[in-house]
Image (cartoon, rainbow, N blue to C red; front, side, top):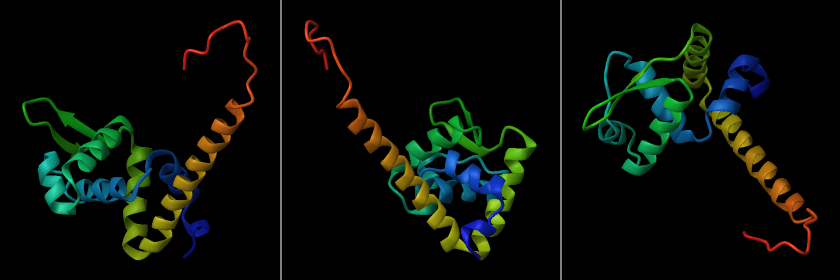
Length: 139
């Protein structure tokens, strides 16, 4: 299977919402155990990733509408996509990942490279912005 065999909605979902492999691993962990409420520490122990990276990934996935966070002294997270289409994409992604990990990982890597290239182009283009020489650059 190559990335073109991954359905378009799933490819778009991955490219727009999953920016790192650890985000994918965490999402699929919480997806697999939907009834469980996870703390950042319990997720870190399960996926063997540092606490800070896990906390960042959990915040990102929550902001993307994939998890809900409970308030409290120790926040807990549960898989809860906002909408059936989003949930269907994650279900399909989990199935594909179980069969074809490499293709999904390549898709995430390509998305990351595209974001890096876009950032580089923007940085390069900003070097050519004309500024009024009478104003002081405050950057």
